[in-house]
Image (cartoon, rainbow, N blue to C red; front, side, top):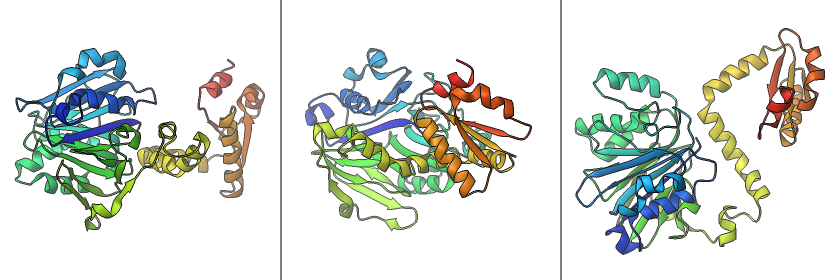
Length: 365
């Protein structure tokens, strides 16, 4: 889930609209999103020769910027991505964007597609060659098949969101439609920025805030496209959306950008809790089902953590005892050596860690 995406489309060559090459604008926007220790980066654009260029690499942006050559690429439309690995190890091949068999469609993605293995097997039987270990790569290949069947991009997106299951914010660049960036959103955040002679789409507002503070927040089930002169949004459940009713202006000072409009980080993180829980549940639903069964079947439950993790353990103890009626005890992880003497067959230990301290204490440092 931990990915940052950006898309930019201009009504002319980007350097004449925004004052710098499109590749450099992509790099700048991605740097605004690279705040979680991401392990790979990449971008795709259609160059002046009409070729879809894809540049990507393992590593942080500033470590690989010369290798990728952000400064030498210009154009009217591009998508970019910075990634924290979920499916597939950090590598050049697993970095985004991902393309179809003919290098005519490029996709960046934030989220997790739960049924990608099933889709991947079906694509392989049809003769598709997938080059990465990621869940994302099935998307351009699905779009390739749908376009080959005669569907338009919008029709293909409509069918795509009926097939893929999970959390996703997708940005798509198609060689045959170089003045548009297509998108689809479910659970994972995605927002449009309305600039002068340019339109942005990103996983977070700070990505493009230097260029525009006029935004449209996309909702679950939305898909469509952005272009310099037109925007189209359709919702899979409600049909065509009047996007003008969703326009809002973000009045943030530079100091408020990192706090996303909140006066301080604590309040920002408090308000993020429902979204964080929703995104987590959507991305690891199968794992949660398995963990739930283990907890429910346990004779006794112990929860351990340090610092704020221990506070979470206390909250977990309270909820499991009072709401679920499960015998639960929390303790500071530095006390693990004492508590392990009381563990018996059928007990379950839940270790919570934000920084790794819980793990170190549990192993006796």
